[in-house]
Amino acid sequence: MRVGQGYDAHRFKAGTFVTLGGVDIAHEHGLAAHSDGDVLLHAICDAVLGAAALGDIGRHFPDSDPAYAGISSRVLLREVTAKVRAAGYRIVNVDAVIICERPRIARHVAAMCANIAADCGLDATAVNVKGTTTEKMGFTGRGEGIAASAVCLIDSRN
Ligand SMILES: [Zn+2]
Image (cartoon, rainbow, N blue to C red; front, side, top):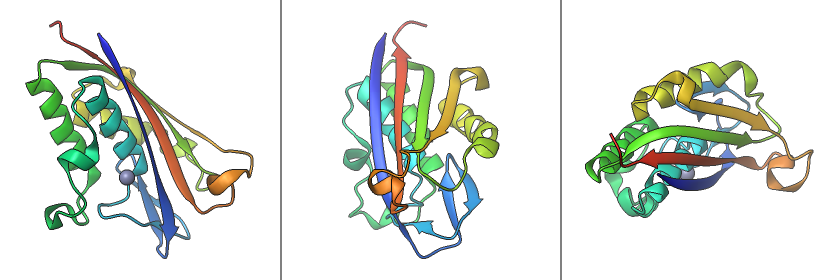
């Protein structure tokens, strides 16, 4: 068994919604990114890749490549899952935290977990997402953007 961790942050830009865990959530800003800016799924991709020592999301999906402009991060997570499987591992579980003052995360957690479970080939009981604030401290506290952190366990046994 092996563990991986991932972290990501994106700044707010003009917009009307943010995409977190594949769920579009109405907000007074969007998230600036080459892809859809889904910080949660990016952190999970890095955790999954990290567990298998396969580098990081930037190496597999460079933001200089126009093929990934505006792409759904769920596509990236499915590709990451396939890469880790091809390396001989199965994902055991994923735990993640979204760090922001707003939007509020709680009512969207079940939909995010369902998306992540589907993309990683997991049972919904093997995925956990929660939100936290930094009590107004730092860039997330000032409402400049959203960060996310994730851990993932993988297993080479069948
Ligand atoms: Zn990102």
